[in-house]
Length: 272
Ligand SMILES: [Zn+2]
Image (cartoon, rainbow, N blue to C red; front, side, top):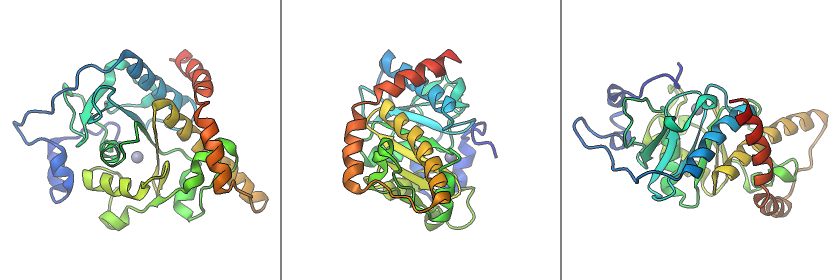
């Protein structure tokens, strides 16, 4: 099923009436949430660039999404309408409340998995931006139980541990694997805890950070680290960064995210 194209119709809500998702959408005739007003042009530009960069760097393809909290209201977030990230423009950005109800969709469809974003923003006030992807090198670690661990200093942010979300524990053995309601989003956010990245068995991953640039950095280097680790495991037993090395490296790198951002942005936007 193509969830980028599938409309988040009100009819679908009935399928999940037992879940907390019911609270995430207004009933017929209810007023949608009020807007926080326009977000800054700089924030919107960064969000568009993030969509393009994540595609250009091989983190997202036709699927996957990136969001950011509204810069004047932490109870709102910004996310593209349901479409391929590489094609996102400013006009495609929608505003949502934390129940993942769009403020004014104007008939545009929403990502089915937007609850990943709203439910995580609810429980992690430190998180300002989120990437969800199905980046290919990461998923084998979600599916095998082999731990994803920091191979080099650039991925020091992985040093606090990378949990794996097992959807069967929350929703049983017969889902389509998607985080398509608030209860699943809440369970995923709880499994992430205080970590920076979580893997989703049979599905993908989520990265969280304090800004768009930081979360793009983490999403890109989670994929790079997964490739490195898979290669290292073929050669022998890798020596990973220990917790102290990883924390120190992450602190250093957090101050340097603008450098790759500018490079990636120029490359990705040049292709637009
Ligand atoms: Zn997904």
